[in-house]
Image 1 (cartoon, rainbow, N blue to C red):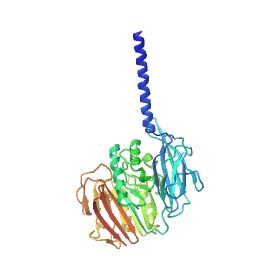
Image 2 (image 1 turned 180 degrees about the vertical axis):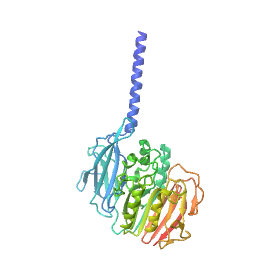
Image 3 (image 1 turned 90 degrees about the horizontal axis):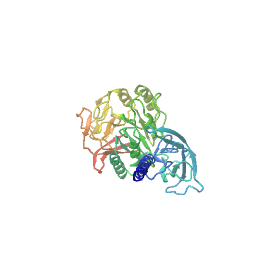
Image 4 (image 1 turned 120 degrees about the horizontal axis):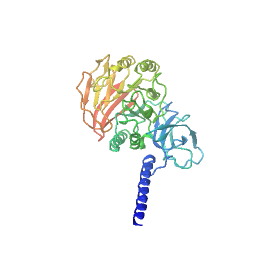
Length: 416
């Protein structure tokens, strides 16, 4: 009898252990305290005209949920049952996040919005439960000629602690530039794009900002690997106006106010992007031209594969090139045709040269400072997470670089 009771006890214990293991796995997949239909990794982007449209992406643990957004004029709206609420259903696709599990990828773009207007919104499946917390966004105003945006790069984390640093960097950036209208991130968002936990932390630590402020990413070598950027582009609803042969969402351009911003992908399809870049710059009538890349033409070192691009920057008088990859801070003299074209001490005037900057890194990883090059006006490694605020006001652009503690490390002005 004792042996029989012992056997029953062992069987019961085994059931409990197996049950606990299954529960822990389900919590890992669902998120502790969260339902499978609850939106996560919510991010807003510019896809069309920022005066009249806004795009959104989010994930759910359930790949069968619909992609529904509801919005209404005004801020702080929590009731979406009354008049004035509009509803739109977008697209849902499925992505495999590990060997056993898939998640739903939900994308939608609202059009027909009014310029310079605040909207409240929420996303979900359209069912009674499982909506995101309400948030808000503001469209670009007509005739915008003065605005700021934030530049960061290389958040590139692995652990939750790594991404806490990324979160603090973005928090400080918006403390210093509370009116910033969008964020440009110069690539390497996470260490391993196949690790969905890293993406969860990336979005989770900045969710208060990324669901309100358009986030415009650049493809880095940790975002596209072996010409595969599926996991990266699945997280964003971006313009699809790039070069033929480029992965949609890795090469694009958009306008905001009096600026034209070009995003190039240094990881693949470089020659086709060169053709596209000439046409893109030639057809822009915006006075300010800004380019964002990952591997820099003039950073801590030079990426010679994009020499055709720098020739086009010269030809079309690009004002500013934002770069990443080097995990150190560098700012070039104004450059033309591969040579220093100005002292860099005062404002850059009359399109005398393009300025190339790398805003260190916004996460935990820093590289040893590389050798100074002829093009370096400012070059250092402070081992501090950094960001820049870029302010355009009519015919003047001011670039200011800060660390996560709010110390200013660099500033320069470009004037037309």
